[in-house]
Length: 239
Image (cartoon, rainbow, N blue to C red; front, side, top):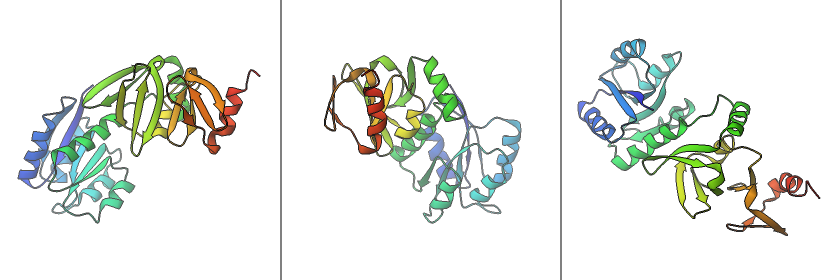
């Protein structure tokens, strides 16, 4: 899958840096570099744009005001030399906020966040769950690669800040930029159960419950009080 992107940046040097960084992402196709929002509006009217690299401080109109003016804005990664606009940027559902000068590792993290967000099974959690029941795998981006991981291979999933870690029956591990709550909507509920704020288990791995410790075929996990009722309802359903 290829996504169209557009750079809106009045500093030619920085625009060139972003363009060079984009060469490391074959999933992103650069449609052009615009010096101001007026140039960008023309391209947006004539093309489908999936992602903007948008400078906040520009002559005549700020990047934030420009984004607010769009009726159906693309995803956006803000670029700026100032930190005071970060909160407003995130309130506009920005993918990320890059502070100049932009380092390659920070740029990669922002783009990976965008690409991870494109892993979608529907427009809402109910539709996502219904579609997840029909699939036998999940697709996500990890370590610059796209991974297609069968549900049967997943033993545990752990949340680690803004990332989730997949642990498989063969002891392989994959990290991707996604919240555990968001991921839960992509998993079939008949195969997985959340047992802790930061842990989801494959039901097939559960062997016993010892107090608040879940014994599994992979790694024992603590059962959190907030998820205990749901777990017991499932675990004792045939008793």
